[in-house]
Image: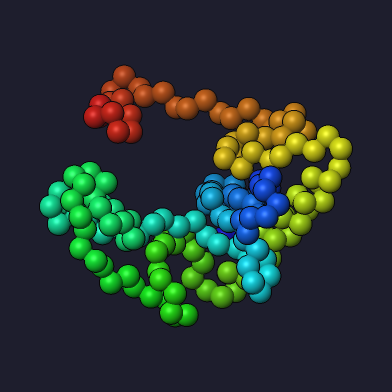
Length: 171
């Protein structure tokens, strides 16, 4: 799998540890969004997209984040939970949604993302800087738009083929 695009969106805050968000495109076909670029104690690093870990309320079964004291649905006081710890004995409150499996892949991702981050920081210092749109990889920059060919029209179903729409119940 080849990294075909990395888009970085710098954050305006100067004091925050979170420096930017980015999206990574693989083979021009698969996108991972909400990758974070963070300034840590040992330097800048990349954090993959994650979600808060949750536990269910014993009364109504609604999911609540691990540090919640009351249920967000029914308001019942939640029992004190044992929060899992990571390898460095810190509370584990988030789980990765997408992440590299091998060290080689992690290093390649981090290298490409941080290079794109540094390039975006340099670009942001120039007059007329326009931030990248990381949330719509289909939206091309103005110079890319003129070079891109229009996408082919979607195939239409024939008379004998049923119409299929994802999630609509029509088959």
